[in-house]
Image 1: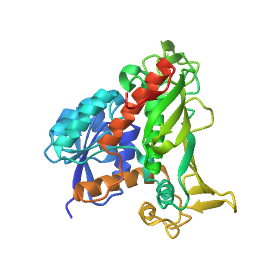
Image 2: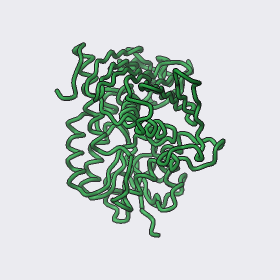
Image 3: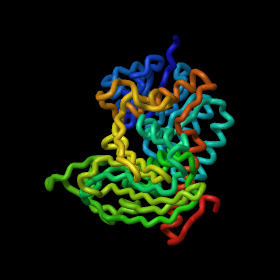
Image 4: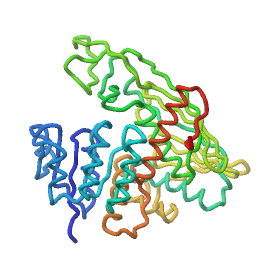
Length: 380
């Protein structure tokens, strides 16, 4: 079987994670990487044993051997690079968000439709076995109609005013931070599980640290030593947000995002209340699913291939008791994507550019709701 040859644009955390996931797929091979400089790209390629290193994205995209591209760059570069990849006729898996606003994502959606290539967005949480299990249990109809959903995505990596990253800079990350970077994951995951779209939002956002102390001459560092020279920087994107949401078919809910909650490292969680059962899942304990009942004992499901429903079992690669987590969800996403590349009739479940564009429209609506202090419909 001939391998699909892949190029990675970017050398940060996302790029590392994508490369590790792809190397667990036998029919995919990472052959090239590009970065913001030739020197950085060469250094990264040697570290990761990747044969080709390019000084910019354009060179990688032009490489005739590269059949598919993973865009793992900062948010502000997503639109430009995604557009170039689509115009070059190469398969594309983009990190989220798809762009920095819905005008850009709408253009990408159009280009993706015209290109004839496989294109997707890296919303990886829908690819956990127990997330899929909730979806199948709801689809069975035996638990009744979903009525309510709540949850959130909570982190602590920006809790201190001395914490700093490029993601705090609007020109690199876009006009939204906590909502766009982690709230988008929650919205995509829950919409996927419910198979219902969010139609209306009412948002309340907050900047907890309006002024942060950025290390001089450094970016994307969490150094908090008093010896580091710092400059004060005004922050314009949210640290926190709570959003009331209305879904299709009368389902209502609320979610909270925070990047300033001490002790919470990467907690994406949701609870769905249906007529006869409730379902609760937490990404920091991903192999367990709580199922609540009123008239008999509650249940706790464990990630065990012998117990899961048909679609969900394909996402569990090890026997019960062998724990799987975040890297495995990303691996499942990549398997699903490249099965689609190999066979266009494959019934995929990864987030499409249509899904990514709707998330951008949702982010725009949340920002507008916060500014105008009112419900905002995605139909506006």
